[in-house]
Image (cartoon, rainbow, N blue to C red; front, side, top):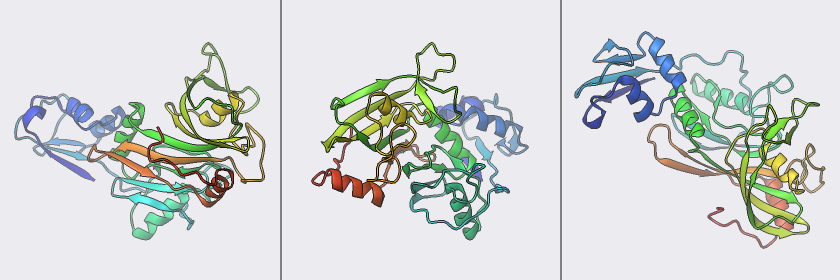
Length: 310
């Protein structure tokens, strides 16, 4: 993949490195990759350093190689709904019970395997570059970058807080205020490499964690909430709501199983982010899957999701 830029206007007079970082929002990792690639950064056909000052009329070329697929990622034909796709990104609506990426227990039944199969059938090399991740039993939207440049820009956007995620969750309990902000650091428990718990800010491995929420409906001792994590900690929403005495319904790790839904009632509903090529903000919504929609219909039969959740 090669990107071409004709330098003019306010871009003239900037060092290449500043142009790459501020104008193109490339990550430090991506800039380093380009620096050490033989044809990574060319100005008027000649290799230059990131200190080279751009002049009006300069032709800047960036070479971003994506020709090598992941050799160890096995392509497997799996059902995976795709909500949007272009040359830079793909947004699947991940089913519950499907892991995001391979692990020692799951190496042939993941989103990564399904996408590897999809692009092999198209004859396109594929490297799995998830911008966000979801727990195995959480359904909903994933944002996957399809090339290094898109991955770098989206990672930078995530670090800058420009990617907005909204989840829907059914909670066991109906005593929360109508809206709120949960600011409780998390850390890994001593007994498990998986389980997280709320801790004090002074705890050595404490990670700041912030969640905003809004209660959308209450019925039958349960609440439907829209939740917006402002940080991206492992199990953040699950631990935060459990810490308030309202665990996510059927969460077998932080709550109790419930026969009304066979997995935690958590769905990644929407993502808003700057498109890695145009920079324009882009919003995608993932309709809840059948098990989640059935649960909502049984608990809140007359409820309709508002257009604006926050």
